[in-house]
Amino acid sequence: MQGLKTDEVFGMDEKKVIVGMSGGVDSSVAAYKLRQEGYEVTGIALRFWTKEQCAEKWEKSCCSYYDVEDARNVAFKLDIPFYVIDVSREFRREVIDYFINEYMSGRTPNPCVVCNERVKFRVLARKADELGAFYIATGHYAGVIHYPAQGRYILREARDCKKDQSYFLFSLGQEQLTRTILPLSDMTKDEVRRCAQKLGLVTHDKASSQEVCFTCGEHTGTFLGAHVSDQASSGDIVSAEGVFLGRHRGLYRYTIGQRRGIGVAARRPLYVVKKDIPGNRLVVGERGALRKREFYCERLNWMAPELPIGKKVPCLIKIRYRQQKLAGTICCPIEQPSTVHVLLNEDAYAVTPGQAAVFYDDTAVLGGGWICDR
Image (cartoon, rainbow, N blue to C red):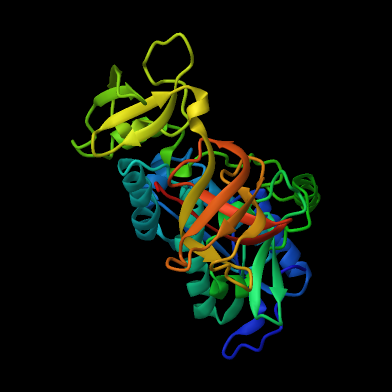
């Protein structure tokens, strides 16, 4: 299985594994597979909301009351211990506040990446320490590769490329990857569902979550409107040349590349090209204005053995989860090794500050960073 480690670890049992169980089919089958391979498995459900919120907003796609109960049901079926951990404070501080602050700063956040790094994997590791378990596991579609000579662990794409989630895990550090097992790396979604159905698990036909969980299906602008202060005021919509075209309803309601809902009538389709935060202006233009062949990323997390400081490294680059990888080169400036300069071989559209850019060597994740405004 991808992710197995042989390093000696003092004080923790390498046959014990903590599995994050979301109440979905993927984590259910991940727990089953590990138990079949002889691990001592403990299931953990993370409650991202208070009990009152879970009961009130049961339709949430992440940690509703029913999701927790589904996870509990699966744990009982698999005959494994099960715990529920309240992480509502961490989730509010690390994910929801980040989400709001990024939009208010003119960027478009990626809360799933941040939640994995700062909440899910951190809390699972803490619980593993408490229970004396070395490994943590989830139902993410990705794999872990160990390079013993360099003492490094890196991610790889899952066999099911349509469900691959390596993009959302790029910010995990070596300490986290060392302890991580991803049991679904070589399974397709159909195989996972068939396995769950054969086992009689209640999650076998459960729909997968696709949206930002904590907005509960609300439009992002509606959600943010209930959480932002008076500084989210309306302002001018202008062309790239500064020509006044109309009024916007608060910059947080828009994202780079957006076409619909701008509120400006024009002969040709207009897109959001830039958000001028100091001037509180929304800059719009035609689709060609969204083309970019180079950009910068900050807060680089590098998994591959050698950091390419001052070097140009050919690779494949993904700038959004649902987009195809693009060929290009990356280079870390000598004076700023935590920043990477990205040069694409062809135009990309709507390169958006605040989103993640992840760098691949074929299916192996070299690293990634956060697209910035430079």
